[in-house]
Amino acid sequence: MSIRVWIACVCTSVTVVAGCETTPTPTEGLASAHSVGDRGRAAFDEIVVSVPMPGADGPYQNLHVAVTAFINPIRKTAGDPWQAQGIVQRCEPRVAVRLSRVLGGQAATAVQEAERLRELARSEAQAVVDEAMKRWEHGSDYHVEVAVASLYWTDASVGQSAQLRRWWW
Image 1 (tube, helix red, strand yellow):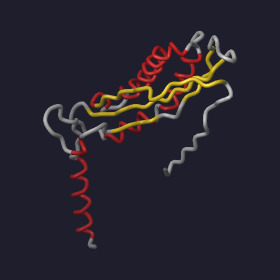
Image 2 (tube, helix red, strand yellow; image 1 turned 180 degrees about the horizontal axis):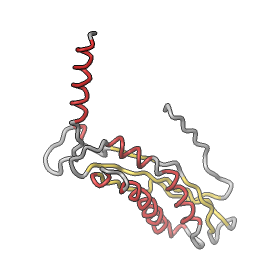
Image 3 (cartoon, helix red, strand yellow; image 1 turned 120 degrees about the horizontal axis):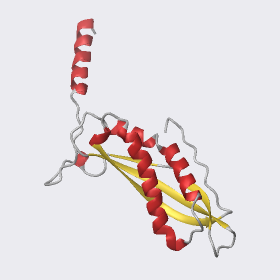
Image 4 (tube, one colour; image 1 turned 60 degrees about the vertical axis):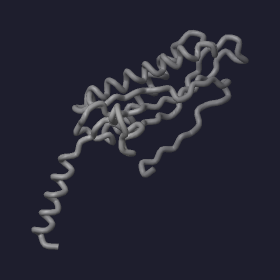
């Protein structure tokens, strides 16, 4: 391949890539298949916090919380959904620390308080993600909705399962 052909290919590639933009899913009418559903998702590892629980076998029970985030553009943007997903995924350690601190600091809990704890976990995780998205130049072009995928208690003998993350998977 001659150098001129190579330069022409590179220039064409740069022009095509530079003009890309992400658009939100249309609110009315039909949409193409790639526009339906969430554009990105970040599922975080389960967080386990020991909390006091009256009436249980032991003084403490393990509260297991799994958080996920749904990532969608709200306007046309040059910001790539993969970048948005990467930012949200990198929030995982801060979300874990915040939830561990906040949920671990709760007074005695009961199963009847599950909805309150679910909302507390969701709002605390949402605050961490919102702060990160504010720092990105295209952050305001995306809506990130944090949700609690699961919340349950186990006795103190059940801990967090080992999670092995490898960068190539």
